[in-house]
Image 1 (cartoon, rainbow, N blue to C red):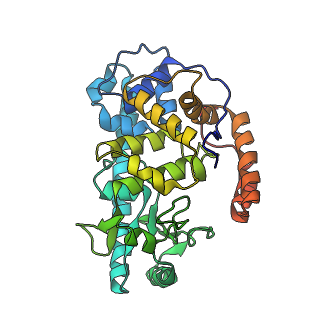
Image 2: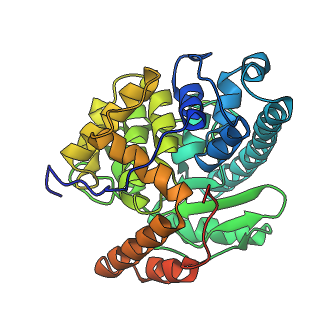
Length: 348
């Protein structure tokens, strides 16, 4: 990818006080600056659409929220955090189960994305949305691990994709994806990176809590988050909003500088896109929004417009389908065709 490439060119969007408040409470220093709200109930809509409701509830006390929001809105924030914490604990039980099987057959798994952030103590339980477990396994042991899990009652819930086996679910605990490699990451000249590459590069370490589980180092978590957010899901911002990426990077900021992540990105993001991402992180952390004419603002608007404009979502789905065709990713092309016209959750 050329250094000056920039893939995000959304239309303009007016910033409402409710949007400003949502971003302020999710990323700025608590409890946040005073922002008079015209329609406080719209805060809930923005927080849900941007995947920030539980994060806000974890960073603000109920009293702080109550100064700006009606009691019924505050209650939804608190309930959503409690419900997420409960779902996440069920997924943690599933993680315990999968790693026990890995040990039983003489292998191990590497946690990825959300569960890695939580197990590493980087993200807070109940504050970081987590839909399933993403675990990286050695390619030559993946089928064996999946077969044992199937014998224990886990059932397939969808098709395999290029980088993972068919997802499997326990009806009580949730879903797990066994990944064969990590899309978008380059490690020691190998792209995409496999579990053996991460171990050889010293980018993972054993979990203190669970035998059979390995945890990525912060620079690898940051690189994967960026590749996942900008490249893999850059054209589906309602599924993976830029605000989730910013939240993960902000949490990772507390665990050391993120510059070592850059070499692992390969061609997943251009220099210009990384600069825009860095500027967006800085401005939101300072409780302000970027200059309206900046790349950082375009990166933010890419998600904001997508969750509020059905027309822009349709445009992005067409782009995603064409990109999948160019890359030979037929499974993604079929997925985009099946979604077209159905719409997604959002403000539109």
